Image (tube, rainbow, N blue to C red; front, side, top):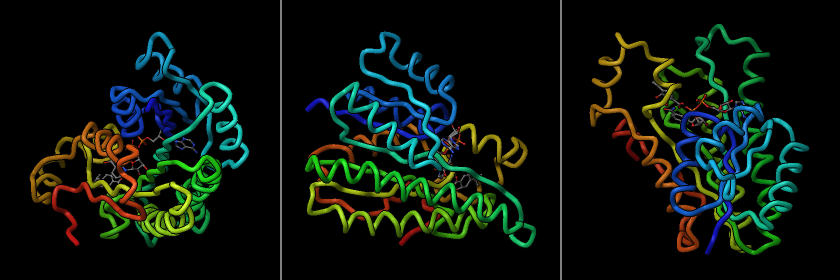
Length: 246
Ligand SMILES: NC(=O)c1ccc[n+]([C@@H]2O[C@H](COP(=O)([O-])OP(=O)(O)OC[C@H]3O[C@@H](n4cnc5c(N)ncnc54)[C@H](O)[C@@H]3O)[C@@H](O)[C@H]2O)c1
Ligand SMILES: CC(C)C1=CC=C(C(=O)O)[C@@H](O)[C@H]1O
């Protein structure tokens, strides 16, 4: 089956890696981000002919943006089978210094984006009788985080809970909703958060002594987006090098 997949926050980093693996697996991909120019540049690099890609501006804090994106995807491709809610914001302020405003900003963006994304895309998929939604959580939501902020970690814990709630709601309609909880993955965000002189210290704390691989995350998404993945829903897939074990 030729599938259409949309990824939020896909102009760079893990979102882009995931979109690239979906594209390589044969999906048509919709690359969305805050900036249309950056989304378009990523789409152009991935798919120079533009035959199997679409770039859209989608601010994940805005329900009208999600609704407009869904309409644009249906207009262009006629269907939407898989969504990866990857966009998020990170702040590293120590917990005792986070202002209520900063707390609200991070919690709101990271959790509303999942809530609205699951609602808008989930409703469409339920009506179509098929869909795959994958939400990017984090190791930080499971162990409280280290280099990342308390508000970020709390928001990622909430994403696991929202994933279960939407999974239950949509299961009978043929829509699965899963989360992926990565630990530190080789990515611009981790390189920016961990200066080169501190990288050995980070690696020493990871049981497998390596950063994770963004392409592997993309391949996991490809698997979760398959029709055959109907029997996993409401799950959180840990990809953390042994940093957190259930
Ligand atoms: N990098 C890691 O090691 C790691 C580990 C665990 C979880 N994650 C999660 O994976 C996802 C991607 O992380 P990343 O490292 O690629 O981050 P990143 O900061 O490199 O990329 C995030 C993307 O989201 C976009 N974005 C930010 N605010 C947005 C908004 N309001 N609307 C739309 N797009 C917006 C940014 O423009 C950017 O392109 C995030 O959910 C993050 O929490 C990353
Ligand atoms: C910097 C490193 C310790 C790190 C980067 C990103 C994360 C995230 O959740 O986005 C954290 O899990 C953390 O491992």
